[in-house]
Image (cartoon, rainbow, N blue to C red; front, side):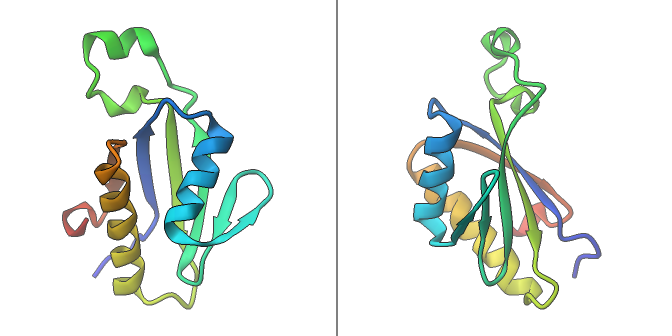
Length: 113
């Protein structure tokens, strides 16, 4: 299906990064690791501050996700099933959207999310 399974998910939230890290883990029930990494059977998520975050630019265009506060780096484990990996990311996005988080995935398999 996809040659590159790396996925970057831009996320905007009023939560502080440590709260966001814990909140995301509550959705996927992974194993918390140092430097805001969450490990699951299907992959790994790193919760990161977006260095391009710019509240001033978001006043003009709040939907310009490139300037949102955070992003998630998501990568599969080598032995992960590709379909399950994509499905797990899709489920996470649905859960976050249901709680009014703004999320936009940037990856080679966006159409499946």
